[in-house]
Image 1: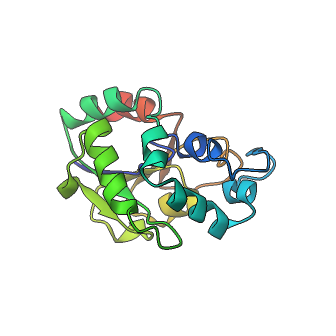
Image 2: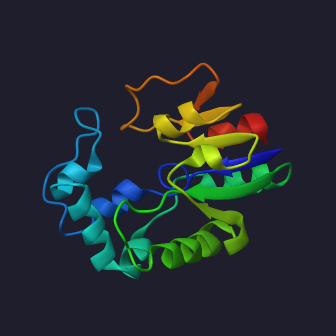
Image 3: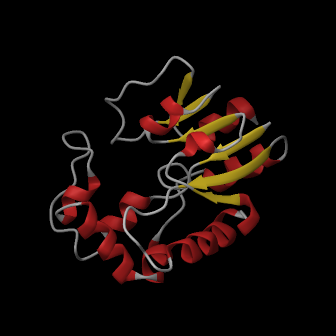
Length: 173
């Protein structure tokens, strides 16, 4: 089976790395407002802060607990690739830093990484993501990884819900 796996919120703690940036001036309470960009004063300000941080942002980006072991388990049976979103503003070195991080931390080589905002274009049997819009639009099958920012969201009938990538790997590995 071809499994497309999102990076942020599935493999990596994007929220944790973003909140370490000095520009994150407002508290983040995902249960009240899931918009991380509000901590920075908006989407543009958040991506500008990430751009200024350069490689430092990806250096601080930590794998989510159990992600590497889950990938090893899934790779034993399936073809995996990472499908990750591009920033909403131009970040000059984003793709370079992201592919480097994915190679070093998760063993995804550059040929195994797809950058797109519209993940439904990707040819895979299942998409694993933490963003309800992505999994709801993906057919025939998708898996949502629950996070505090998506806990109150509803998903389409074809979407399975898991607590973590490790939980997903227990079922599919």
